[in-house]
Amino acid sequence: MSKDIVCVTGGAGYIGAVLVRKLLEQGEKVRVYDKLYFGDKALTDVLDRIELIPGDVRTFKADVLDGVKCVMHLGSLSNDPTAEFDPKANHEINFEGTMRVAEACKRQGVRKMTLASSCAVYGFHLDGVVDELCPTNPQSEYAKSKLDAEVGLQSLVDTNFCPVVLRQATVFGFSNRMRWDLVVNTMTMDAFDKDRIHVYCAGDNWRPLIDVNDIADGHIIAMKAAEDKVRAEVFNLVLKNFRILELGHWIRETIKPHRKVEVEVLFGSKESRSYQVSGEKAKKVLGFAPKVSVEVAVTKIWEILRSGRFTDFSNPIYYNIDWMRLLVEMEQKLKVIGKVF
Ligand SMILES: NC(=O)c1ccc[n+]([C@@H]2O[C@H](COP(=O)([O-])OP(=O)(O)OC[C@H]3O[C@@H](n4cnc5c(N)ncnc54)[C@H](O)[C@@H]3O)[C@@H](O)[C@H]2O)c1
Image: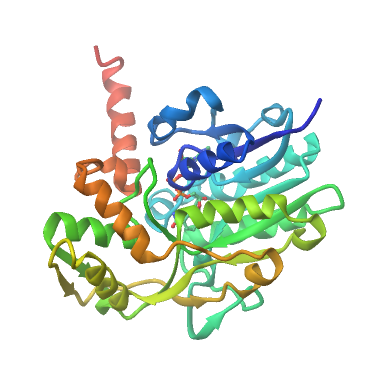
């Protein structure tokens, strides 16, 4: 059987919805494997051009990879609060699920697998810019599970299996599966909805950021890269490091031609991460050069909001932790109620 399909786990998610479209634009055949926590609405317009397999990585079956040449593994719980909400599920999905997908790759002879890991594995680093050789310092269940997945994946490497770890910076920008719980998106939404940008923890912390389109490109570049360049390698994917306060002002300036908004600095709560990350290795080895600035992404989000789309800001589906809490609550209620009607 020829192997010409790209399988994207988590392909119905925020990054996945952008990545799947890019793969289609580049003439790839795409199979999405996703638990569909957020439904498949983000893929509605491409459903007739992809294969969509609803499923959980915890029960991933090797035959999902029939005809697959590369797996892009994005399917996981994807932030600190959801991981803290159910640490056991987080470990099972983010670590064990990743291992299950990787083992299926090896069984089915899928040579390449990219892992959507996170710069959160660096945790707190107050002394300069960290690169891939710097020690990790994960501060949360989420970050630990991502690091476990990286190490687990690398332990499976051999001449026939080439995993590539992509430590993604915090992502921003528009996706058809919109997330308003990511810092740039949240600030833009607040500016639109409240004429105010909130900056928490005094805005002291550093955070590396990158646009969702660039992240998608990163996975595609890693897929196409020669195996000997990327086998078991770790790459940071980052556009630029921002202090959160600077980011708030930057977004205010970007929006200024459309609306005058205030930046409100809040003190008190604790932030568990601060780090600056270098993207030099990805640039040197992969030729990966992020193209989309915060300014361009914010302007695009602003236009979408002005057109009246995605303005139902109180809908919990845009906030991962709120949505997971709601799903669990409904699951409990439905156990008692049975079928609703
Ligand atoms: N968005 C960011 O800023 C960011 C930064 C670093 C790393 N990441 C990683 O990138 C990946 C994608 O993130 P995102 O922002 O698109 O998140 P998302 O929550 O929008 O998408 C995750 C997708 O994975 C699916 N999924 C979750 N658990 C699953 C399971 N058990 N089996 C199968 N599918 C499952 C969900 O249904 C969803 O469609 C995640 O692995 C995340 O940890 C994201």
